[in-house]
Length: 94
Image (cartoon, rainbow, N blue to C red; front, side, top):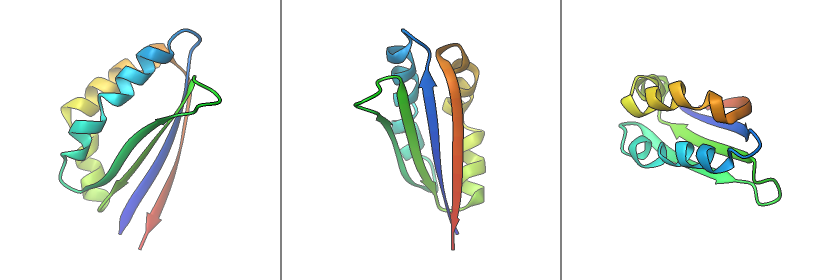
């Protein structure tokens, strides 16, 4: 079953560019991972502080592999200083 996640980030005032750079750095290596079906970052036009990551993985194993990747570890250890709020939704599709 595929797993689709939607993660929303709200950057702190003045940190929009840093948040954009950090999230954008995740796209290319994530797309190259085994089991990645879709991975994109979107920035809202009407609220430049708001970003959404949309990702789809073939299965739980692929998502778990993503969470142990080097680029994911860099993101996890780096985003908090630039992020005011983060929340996510997960959808499993049979």
